Length: 211
Image (tube, rainbow, N blue to C red):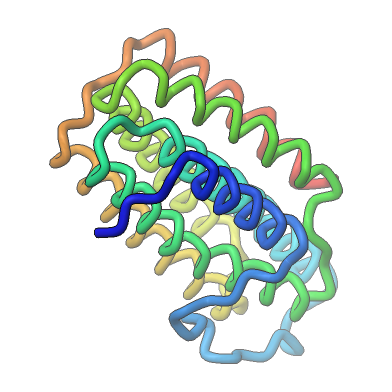
């Protein structure tokens, strides 16, 4: 496992931010949508799917920022590698949701730079509390994302099989990331912190639905 210098890690973070915000990320796995068409969707269904997928895309923008920041300040080299690997896994989600938005004729959030910057800052703070707390933050984040994706499965139009397939695979991957962080020694976060995370997520999701 190659150890990067602090400068190298900063450059990796900068490169990751540029790719995330410019839409230059490419998935390593094929999209679960299987290239399904959206022509069968009514106009209102297409708008709803576009809004929900935009929210999911914002979640992936934030995931990239969080994992990159936590990897940057991780004390343990193996843990840093785990964060970096998780970020690479999440690139698939980022690319899938952006591709689906294009298919639906919808756009990404205009506030993506703000979401990225805020999530990166939160990741740095979480990492500064030590690896156990940082891993615990991952566990809580991924569990909340699982719940969020489950709600989207209920809200997505039944006819939108492409978006539903993407969300289902994302939910499965997030569960795996949470389990891995827990097994690596993630410590449970205090209740006020978990509540604050939920409140912040509600602000993000409600805003990204429209903007």
